[in-house]
Length: 523
Figure (cartoon, rainbow, N blue to C red):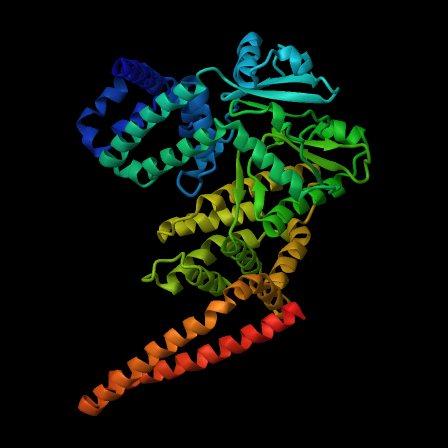
């Protein structure tokens, strides 16, 4: 039965590929050169194929394939390090809007999840969906205590639908990577695996709730950003209940101006929120498109952002933060050698890479950008160009940095719509500089020392025994070296003796620092 279902789905996919003349991409493979004449027999070749660009045809085919493929296309649109710009730009236009399913089904799902009748939890529940997407839809409701909430409900059997489509995509990716040189460059299996992980994560609404709770804690009592409260007692894996928010959609510039919102302040706060998430929290909302951002205009001079939909978030290591901060500063100083050195220091470049070649490649894509006025320079485009250079030098860009680049492009686009003349670099630089100052210097050293002292104090009682064992082993090694030296006077053994003496020296310094640190901590 599964084979028949897959075959039926595959036939439909092939029909849609032919309809939008995408079969020419397949026939372009050298395996199918003798069959390329078939493309000319496709009637759509002489209509759609002549009127629409490659990206447009792919986008429209995905829209016809259904909501899961639309979701996949949206995720693909963020991978500009792997797919051509013209296709990525078209995929970014995909709209994840599908007809809602019956509200009665939503009611049944909620009752099954809560194991009680709906009326025992909600004073009011609107069976008409507020919004509907490919994986879930949202209903307005009111709790018994009077709180206004929204209830997010997964679509019925959506797990099986996703599993079937991912299974099919995996098979197609395997075939493409095995038989097509052109497709192999885009690493289809890797992309499908990333897409699958993202989709499976979105099937667990408790994960989204946890993401929202973390962001809410990070911005607790902040005038910059409001994150809705999650009602955990009424939430489960397929139902999420959260505070209902009211605000002006960020893309509704007309309403924002009518509310007398300070647009320059709003744009600056958007940039501040983004860089605060990056450099203070190492945790950021990675799906900040205009449909997920609202503005509270109660105080027009000090507007507050409101975020929703927390299915996709990103987190950064300290190494990621340093990579972003130091690269941005080096780029804007046009110090391309420093950029290359940073890539080596972080272990991103293969050891056999020629630095001068990498430096030259970065210069060739960066100089045209810096010829523009500073306020027009895009951080997101800068990262994108860097990723494209990285692809040539076989650098494996980490998924969290791809998410960051996609989010940064979205934030820049929004802020420039709100305040076209804003200098993003001027607004962002203080946050980058502040983070770098926290990471280096005496204060940073003392902070790291204080952070580690509790652990060291627990391990202190075992230190004398460990130190004795290490010194005993070193003494025995030294005796063996001297014995070997008397026999052969080997240069390598002398080098080992120097290393042993240096080890004694290091142990002495570490012990001194430990004692001083503990005294400082407890004093």
